[in-house]
Amino acid sequence: MFESLTDKLQGIFNRIRGKGRLDEKTVDEVLREIRLALLEADVNFRVVKEFVARVREKAVGDEVLQSLTPDQHVVRIVRDELVALLGGEAEPIRWATRPPTVFMLCGLQGSGKTTTCAKLARWVRSQGRNPLLVACDLQRPAAIKQLEVLGEQVNVPVHTPATGGTSDPVSTARKALEHARSQGYDTLIVDTAGRLQVDEALMDELQRMRETLQPQETLLVVDATTGQEAVSVALAFNERLELTGVILTKMDGDARGGAALSLKAVMGKPVRFVGVGERPDALEPFYPDRVASRILGMGDVLSLIERVEQTIEEEEAKALEKKMREASFDFEDMLNQMRQIRKMGPFEQLIKLVPGYSQIKEQLGEVNVDERSLKRMEAIILSMTHKERRNPEIIDYSRKVRIAKGSGTKVEEVSALIKQLMEMRKTMKQLAQMQKKMQKRKWNPFTRRR
Image (tube, rainbow, N blue to C red; front, side, top):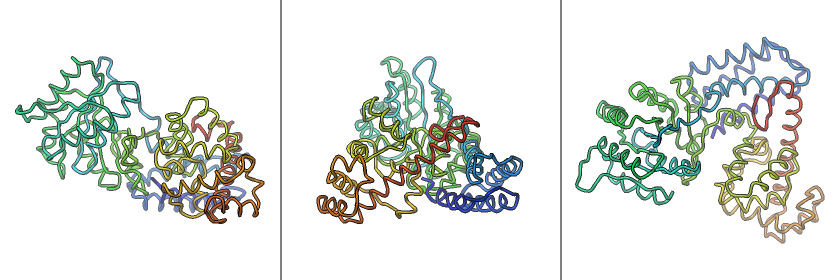
């Protein structure tokens, strides 16, 4: 997600790197390019105008810190404004004081609503709760069966309308709520009917369901790839249903990110989750500070560590975090993590969380890491000696030839993998240095906290 915007912003910041000072002319040139980059990312025009005005006010009216270069100064300002634009502090889920907590998901047909219900149920279970899925989409053929199949996949039961009973979704929702209370389910996730477009019949049904369920969270599911159309749909639903937030699906297929960057500013409601793939675990909580860091090419160490913690022991996770902070990550670590990657998600998503990924991509070209590529990388590392894995600096040309023969790959592939590791180390080291420089302002590029 955001690949196009990240590449453009990296290019802008690279062009001012090395300048001794910031002046109004330089700031105006940078902001002109940032404005174009945001518009090309399909961000709402009014949002872009206000964003650029705020950045300009801070960049021109503020002294450049002696310990920072101009590009770091601009990055800091842009990052702070991006965090604010995306919603500031992530809003916590409104769990009910008296269970069950009700999540009511709504949206148009084709937005991925039913699949998102199952993904959300899996996430709720990971929080130590006991969810129940509710099939209230009685309009679309096979919608109930689809939810039952998905419920099986995530090991969450599904409440469906009684056979031969009423086909009224409001009645189904009411009975599901009673069932949840009597059977001890503490979370209800309700799948509702959609339409091809916003219409009166849809809104009337959803309003009646909302009155019946009194949900703690009324979440709109929208397709991120539709850009500003997603914002228009959100506005229409929010006007009638008083949404508490939005779930953006297909974010892995949206390289621009205009919807994510516009929603909070336009409609005043936060993005709660983003869907980043087809897998049942491909739903992520939306953290504005982490997303802003990803957009600026700083990676997302916290999200990466959280994924790792789901598959490895706590002590291993702490050791990995320490190595990433100290930029001492080696091929032994990479090999160990590769063996966990299949449990953590697609590699091409994980690598984008690593600080400096955009620079690595620029120098090595677009890397399409599929399952076969991952196995080749693993074979290369396994062909190294333990000493070479821990000290990649000693791998000269003759060693590369031996490693390539042993792994059935080319010398160029061995060199590319070594270069990738070195660039990762270099970027992590730069971020660590930036952290020290910015301590006076109490901003940590690893935790992205003030």
